[in-house]
Length: 95
Image 1 (cartoon, rainbow, N blue to C red):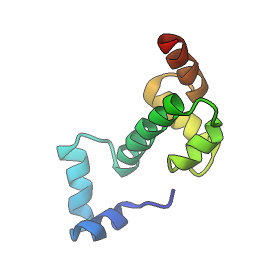
Image 2: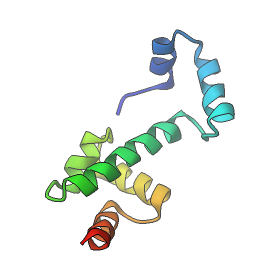
Image 3: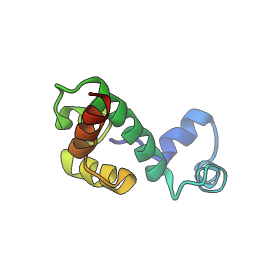
Image 4: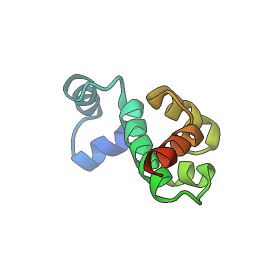
């Protein structure tokens, strides 16, 4: 949850403004947080499908979200449904 663009820049050995520019211009993301959330949500989708007995809260925390509210909002903004609806739809598609 505490990951910042400065952390990524340091890890890459690059200036923060260069990393931010690459995220927006090369990767086409709106900003660093959107990039991170996209990856967190993709991870959450895999967990929701692979671990149907785990709670949505556990999956949100394991995916790097600090709490359930921001996770639900980011998930719905990205996929158009809540994590619970996503899980139910995937279950019925498989089953």
